[in-house]
Image (cartoon, rainbow, N blue to C red):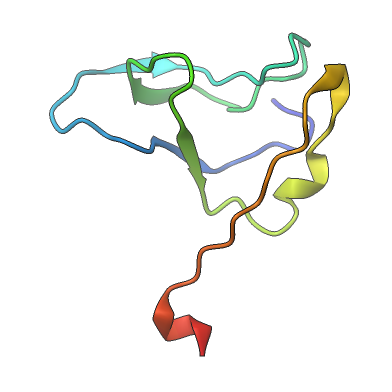
Length: 87
């Protein structure tokens, strides 16, 4: 379990239809034992270094656990709102 227990659905940005999936755990980049992002095993296709994943429905407080530990830059946030909700 992570420090704040992230229970989001993790999906690759570019999902290959029909690609095999594997039981996976997702870890952050800090090389710290508490940097496990997924509290449980998730099914993901094979990913290359640098490929992006999306954390769906993470909620407003997800960013509050961001850290610049070990020299890593804080994440850049890009809000996405559909046109119906914008107005």
